[in-house]
Image 1 (cartoon, rainbow, N blue to C red):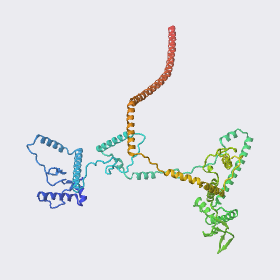
Image 2: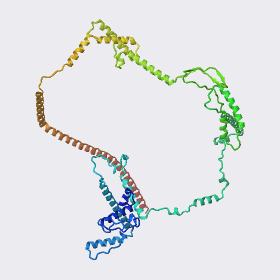
Image 3: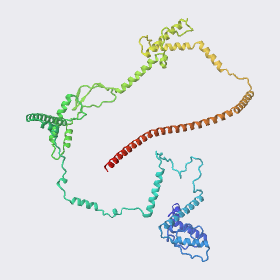
Length: 592
């Protein structure tokens, strides 16, 4: 059991028994009693030693082995409470044979030992300058993390659709019930399985093998494969209805058809076997002449190999077919040539024989990748589109809407007499109409050609020259002068602040006066709003009840009609039965 000596033995590098003996020796030296224990490691172990001191009756000691001490006679004159305690202790000590009493005593002993070990550990830590507490310290803030109590980086599963609180309670109840049964009767083992002999299986196997077996069970028969019937039920029924001459003619025709069918099937099977023997690799894709030569060589080689490695009766068809296919492979060709990477254009020409090696040189350049060609074409088309867009008007470049303008439209009213402005307006109308025609794909309007690069640069230079004229420079100078001038108010700041404060005070007074005047209206508005909301809720409830009652009324009306009809039918049945009974009664009365 764990105690204070076991808890400190690992720290001191000694056994628990040595720690107890050292502690007892120090206590004896402090009390002036000479220790008579010369042999330190003899006697009882650390589990049977006292937890605190060596003296027999020290206050606060907890003796783990009180039953090993000599009994002390009780005093004759005891108080009433001491006698009661003594009798209770005797009654308790008398019941030491039961399992529960033994378990309870063991639990109390273990708890007390743990408590004393914890106190001793805290005392030693406190002497070393480490203060510990039994309870966790109070958190300084809500999100403070206690690594001794909480689980860091815990990911709790999300809640499901259904509440599992009842399941948790039932699981706990089932666990407690199982624990109670185990404590009472223990875990039930399969004793019959333990008593079963180990060689049961071997004996069963021997008996099974010793039984006589039939030949049918020893050798598994293959499934009987029969050909399809030549005549089906429909054919037989038709033939049975024919005469002798017609039957003979029909049978001859069917025999001829079946014979030709069989011949066709035999031919197909032979052709398929021939094709299987001529199977080549999928890598051998050559021209017609090469194919014929390869086929001839393959046939010769396959015949030679087939004669050399003729399959015996023990080999399977799979090995034979694999060997034939491997033998049908063509001879390797040695007509390749190593080419340097630096050479861009490799020329291939006639075939030369060098040292018995055939070399072929081909005069073709390395083909360019089609994907790269497509990408380059797309890049080039995009550049051409951008350049063409730059040559068009600014409105088209910016994606603005182009209006539809009539040819005789005048855009300048102020300078109507200016010939230059008239030409500009005319050219502008042409440009707008041309852009509108290009965007809408119309053909009845003349198209203005786009500016080339030289014309565009010339226009840009002219615009720059017009911008840098004297009027623009004068405008810039005046604009800068106006905005650089600072306007300072000739007002005393103190006076301005006082005026602002007076405005604030007057505004506050007006606000208070206005609040006094409209405060009643505001409260009245709030009360009426609250009452309106309450009335609205009540109205909704009443409407809901009314709708439910109307639905109930409709249902009751329908069911009432149905019930009334049912009752009428029952009454009619009763009336008819009564009439029949009355008629029977009258007949019986007449007969009597």
